[in-house]
Length: 115
Length: 112
View 1 (cartoon, each protein chain N blue to C red):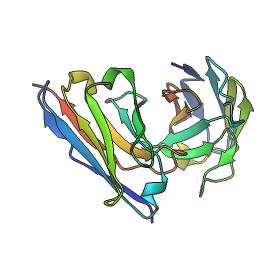
View 2 (cartoon, chains in turn orange, green):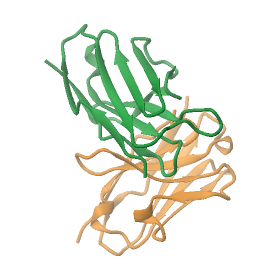
View 3 (spheres, rainbow over the protein chains, first blue to last red):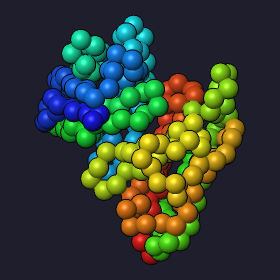
């Protein structure tokens, strides 16, 4: 059974950092591009970043460029999102998903940026 | 960025009714590799998104065949042939032809 399990969310003050993790199982993680998608409370879906199979290629939406870093550890079948200089507008549920065809999604992890 | 416009934003239906959702793109979604990277998702209340359709018209694994997708270029449609109670939620189209990937604003399907 395919599983994507996010962790690392929580309440953080503006300007601080947080690192999300997504543990994958049930499929060959290293064969898939991976992505993070977020959803602000009561809002729609917003793509955040993706990473290639080997990690050598990454792409970010403009609003997080220079503040967020996507990475992966294929040996651990884990995807990461390092979020620095957090802003209130980054408050959202963050989902990890397979970028190849968006067929697998995690359950999401909530990040709240507030003082 | 590519803008995807979904209509309607709210769709009221009875069980068994057939309904359609439109997704219009600000640019053609036909990629140079010949594929059109247009997807449809359903997000039920309190759940993560579930992929229904990929590459315009391909049914995802385990998705009932009452769902179908069609279209080309800039105009795309998701059809549900006979709404069931489990279909209620918010539907999103998404394109991944042009970076960055973008989502439509969503269509909420509710019971009439």
